[in-house]
Image 1 (cartoon, rainbow, N blue to C red):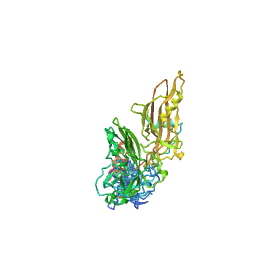
Image 2: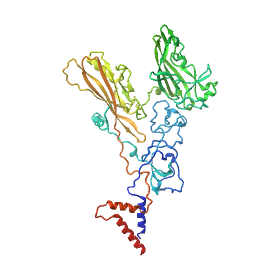
Image 3: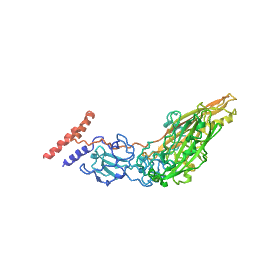
Image 4: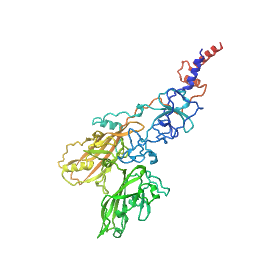
Length: 605
C-alpha cells in the first residue's frame, strides 16, 4: 500500500533538486523566439519529447548579454514590415517632415519595405517581445496561460520559452514630484561630484540607398560625376574637394582656402565662382546613368538666390562664394525630385595673401512636405532625450538650444557659444572685458553673457517638446547670490559663475526607456570687484540621473539547471544535510533508511 507513495517521493526528489529555482535566460549565441514564432503552445500544453519535431526561430534583433539575463527585445529579421508600422511612439523620428535614416517607423519615409532602403532598423523602430526560457528537460507539462514555445538554440539545446507579460517588471517606478523643497535632497542622493563608402563602378542600382553618393551629369561635356561637399582636413582645415555628399545625410562642412596669387585666380578659380555649383544636373536614381538622353532621370538645379560672377576690382576680388546651401527633396525609392541652391558671397583683399573660409550645407527633406514642418527645428529625441543631443530651452514662445560660454584664442569671451548636450557634463570659461563703470549696467551685461542672448525661462521635459504646448516644459528654478554687507562703497557685487543642474530619469518600458528632465536649476556664485578691467566667468552643466528601477524579480529560471539523473541523488542531499545538522538530532538519512526498510517488509509479507 505504501509503494505508490514511495515512487512519488522518489520522482519528487528527481524532478526538483535542492534550491532549484527558475531564472531568466539569454546569451549572445542563444536563439530567442519572437512574436512570429508563436505556435499552438497554450494552456495545458505538454512539452514535446526529444524525439518530436522542434522549431528553430529566425535570427532576432535586440540587445543580449552573455550569461543569464532578461531578453529585453527581439524581432525576426525576415518579418514583413508594414507600410506605416503601428507603434505607440517612434523614438528615432527626430526630424519633422524628413525621413530619418534607419528609422523603420518614420512615416515621412513613405516606404513599403524599409529594409530595402535601410541596412538595419534602429532600436525601438520595430516591435519587440520578451521571453523567459529554461531547459526543456525541466518541464513535463506547461499550464501557463501565456504563449509558450519549444525551440532549438544555436548550441543544439532544446529550450522551453514563455512570453513575459508582467507590467511591473517592464516599467520604471513613477518619480515623485520635484520642486524647490526636495531638489537639493534628490541631487545629493543620486548625484556625484559636479563638473562613407567610396564610389564603385558597378551596375547601377534601381534607387539610392542611405549614404550612397549622388550622381551628377554635365551635359556640355557628357561626363558623369558625383555631387561634392568639400570638407576640411588636417590641422589647418584645408578644403578636400573629393568628399562626396551622401544620400539622405544632411550635414554641414567647413574648410579653408589659402591663395598665393588671388589676382590671377579671382575669375579663374571655379571654387570661388557660384556658377560651378549648379551648372550640371542631378540624376534622380542611379539607373538613370544608363539612359542619359532621357531627361526624366535628370533634375536641374534651381537657383534661389543672387549669384554674381567674381570680379577683380583693384585690390579686391568681389562676389566670392563663402557659403553654398543645397536643398534636396526626395521621395523614397523614386529618388531625388527637386534640388535648389543658394549662396552667400563676400569680398576678398588680393594683397597680402588672403584666406577664405567656406561653408557647405546639404539638407534633405521629404518631397512636397508642409510649410509648417519645414520651419520646425530638429528634435532632441522622440519622445525621450538622446544623449548628446541639444538640451532644449524656452523663452516666451522661442525654442532654442541651451548654451555655455566659449572663449576666443586670447581667452576673452566669444560671441559664439558651446551647445549644451543632454547627458554630457561640461565646463567652460572666458574673460569678460569690462566696458562700463556703472555697477548696474555691469551686472546686466554679465548676466546676459552667462545666459546668452536670451534668458532661459523653461526647459523641455522631452526631446520633442512643442513650444506651443506649455505642458511639455518645466520652469527653471533659480538660486541667486546672497548679498552680504561689505565695508567697500566702491565695490560691485557681480555673478562670476553659473552652474546648470539638471535632474533627469528614465521612464516607460525598461526595454525601450525614455529619458526626461524632471527639473533644472540655475545656481549662481557671486563676488565683489573693484575697478577691474577683466572679469573671469565660468559656466558649467551637471546632469544627475535619479532613475528608480523596479524591484528585481524573484525566482527566475536559470538556463544551466539540469535534472540530477542519479538514483542516489536524494540520499546524497539528505546525507549532506545530516552532517550539517545539530548534534543530538535524528539524521534525515536514518529516517529514509527506516522508511525503505518498512516498505520492503510490507512487500515481503
